[in-house]
Length: 323
Ligand code: AMP
Ligand code: MG
Image 1 (cartoon, rainbow, N blue to C red):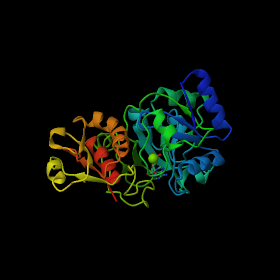
Image 2: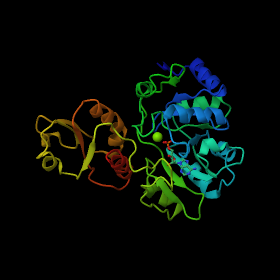
Image 3: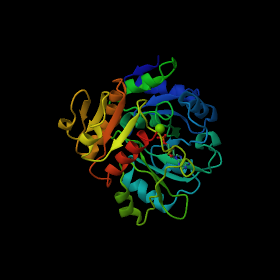
Image 4: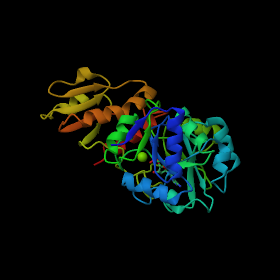
C-alpha cells in the first residue's frame, strides 16, 4: 500500500529525496494527480512507465517552475512559447517543442520533441522548488488507459501494490481534466489535446491554431480513441436523449445526465453540473463512482455544446465511451 502524506515541509523533502534516488512520487496538480520522475533520470522515467503499464512510445509531460525551466530542457523555445508562457503559465497548458539532446529518449517516448508545462498547484510548485527547479516528468497517476485520479486516495487505489510509493496529498485537483496540449514544433500551432485552456483562448493569442480530430496514436501518442475509460461498458447518448436510450434497457444502468428525472428505476442517475468547469472537475470522480456500482452499462448524456471548455469534456467522454 502506498503512503499518503500531508504536504508538510518534511514530506516535500522526503518526496524530493525519493525522486533524486530514482523512485517515482505522486503529487497533486491543478489538472489531475501526476506520477513523476526527474526528467533527466532515464531509470526513474522508465520506472514510471513500468508502474503505469504505459506503452514506451507514449511521451511524458515535463513539469517546470517557469519558462527558464522550460528553456533548460528544450532546444527551440520560441517567442510564441514565451508569449504563451507569460500569459498562461503557471496553468493547464502543455507546450510541445524540440528537446535538448541530453533529455533521455525514455522521457519522451523516443521523440525529438518534449512536452512542457508549469503547474500552478502550490504543492507541485513546492516540490519543484525543493528540487532546485529541475524538471519532473509526470503523466497522470493511474494505470494506463484508466481514469485519471483527482484525489490522493484514487492514486493509492491505482497503485495498491506499490509499497514504496509516496503520494503527496494536495486535496482535490481543482480543474479535473488533463492539460491542454499544443504543438509548436511544426510550422503551424496544432492543438493535440483540448483542456481547460480553450482553443478559443489559444487562437486569441496565436492567431491560427489547427485543431485536427486526433483519434490515432501516431500524431500524439496517448490520444488513443479509447482512453480515460471505466471498466464497465459505457455509451455516449445525445443531449436530451437519455429517456429514449433507456427505453430498451432492462438491466440496471448507471446514468450520468443533466436531468435525473429522465431516469426511471431500476436505473441509477447521477445528476451532472450544467456549468462546464464544474462538470469537468466532477467528471472523473463520477466515472469512478458509477464504475464501482456493478451496473451492466454506463450511459452518459453528451453536453449541450462542444465549444469552449465543453470541447475538452466531450473529448474525454468520447474516449471513455469508445469500445
Ligand atoms: P498525460 O498522460 O496526461 O501525461 O499526457 C501526456 C500526453 O501529452 C501524451 O499522451 C501525448 O498526447 C502528449 N504529449 C506529450 N509529449 C508529447 C510530444 N513530445 N509530442 C506530442 N505529444 C506529446
Ligand atoms: Mg494519462
